[in-house]
Image 1 (cartoon, one colour):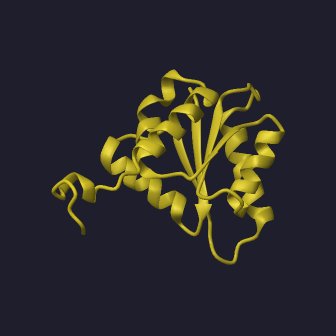
Image 2 (cartoon, rainbow, N blue to C red):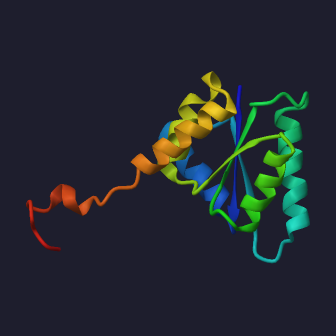
Length: 140
């Protein structure tokens, strides 16, 4: 089973995982690691590393996918350090449609397969929904 680790600034990760749980039920293969205001990158690095160690004690490739909130932020940089070490795959721009899709399919796919799914599901979940209800050619 692939473990999904969600991380981001503030309480983003916990909020995203709890919201996904409301929709899909069990998210036992998903872990949230927040980066609260006032905490340091060293602490976040330790927490992400410990989550990977718990999820994949044998260090097998393709077992951990990290979803981070935004490319370039501290959570993503920590995640990319783990990816560079071969301990995880990483997708940034985490959103709810992405996590819902992954939570429902994590048991049957590797981290690289889930990373590809995450990008597609995340992009597909972004819509200009106003165009769905406005008359054709209408201006909002």
